[in-house]
Length: 41
Image 1 (cartoon, rainbow, N blue to C red):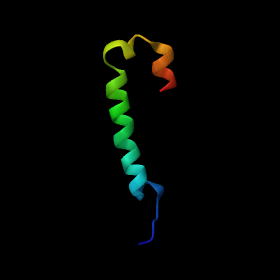
Image 2 (image 1 turned 45 degrees about the vertical axis):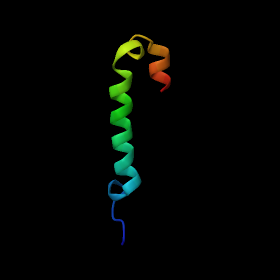
Image 3 (image 1 turned 90 degrees about the horizontal axis):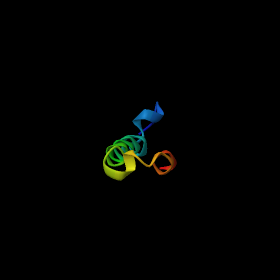
Image 4 (image 1 turned 180 degrees about the vertical axis):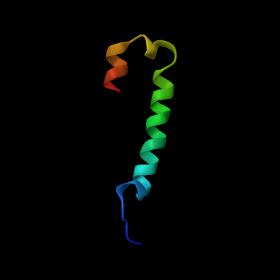
């Protein structure tokens, strides 16, 4: 299978899922108010 675009890589698709989960977690609770920690994550 030849990859034409990096968006077609399975790891790229997984990274989008992980990114969304991180944003969901850091937008709640104590994370949302601890700007330094949230920005580092």
